[in-house]
Length: 236
Image (cartoon, rainbow, N blue to C red; front, side, top):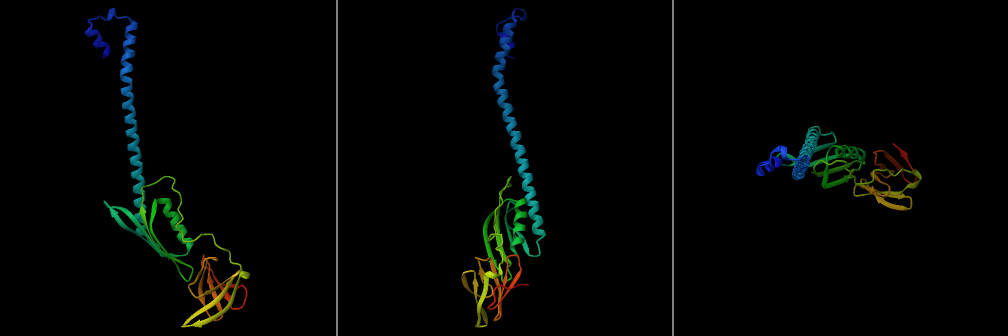
């Protein structure tokens, strides 16, 4: 375009223009237009990248929402999954409530985090006499994330403290006001316990207390019976 304009403005015939002049004019024209074309190409490439990223994020979000709907419809026998809040018809908060051994809680949390990005809004734990844990947890649903880091939401360390019989002894028992109590020795510590007491140092729950024995419940749900004035005990 610049070359034809030069010819028209200067009334020059093609025969009188040297090859060197033509090449110089072409190079000048390329020098003017190349940055503009390059910028336009880069802008278009960035637009394509943004569109592709947006489509990928929306697809990931759709997969999250589909998984959420499936879980809410297929609540387990020990837990319920509920979408508690929505915005523009999209889930924004999710709740898990149930009662189970810690191993089941660990599995459901692991599976959940494999499918969806969550942040804890509130968390409530209560240990039951039989060793199960009641939990009610509300999560904020976050945008899909790549390479999420696993978050441990369990109330205690999952690694179990091994039960060693010689570390335990029931020193005495008593009954008062229709409740039974026991004086229990664990290693060098002595505890006064009743049904429902939790011993964090041993990670055990006192399942029941009678005048003759104390029954403990391990984290995995196994019962251990300790007779009075005898070291150790028997596994039920």
